[in-house]
Image (cartoon, rainbow, N blue to C red; front, side, top):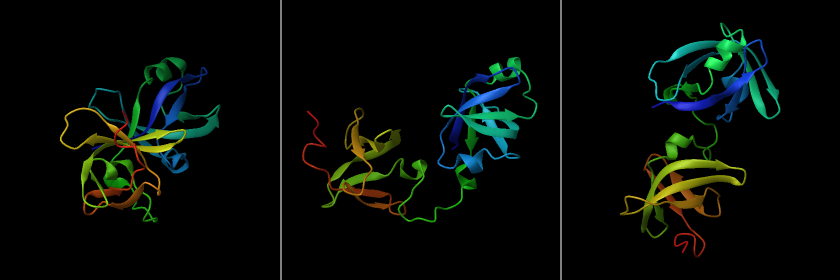
Length: 175
């Protein structure tokens, strides 16, 4: 499994800079000067290594300059490239209440009384906060969106593969 930490949105300028949409909580570390990034185009398997020569913020995006990508033509060819990390290379979290998205995906969701709710498909990041996209128990389609907040998510046990929730009335039957 690979985790996406960024995606090249477009080229910037004529000297090969790349505008990157960040998908990591720690861009300063992941995109630091001298860091070797592993990237691939969507739907391709071949990984290519790139060394960060410069990084700066510009209009809400990260601008990167990579070794060997030094003109507009080369940077245009990078559009859509995904920068990836192997989850095994990630340091463990110091905070017991923080989780990587991939640690939550696939966990069973249940109520405090043990009633199954479903399985986490993915973690969605929105301006309002994180949401768990949950496939309802016994269904092959559909999703429930559960806000990932302490008032609703009462416990998470990655080791046991379970998330317990205490949803407000109507959250699980949105009709």
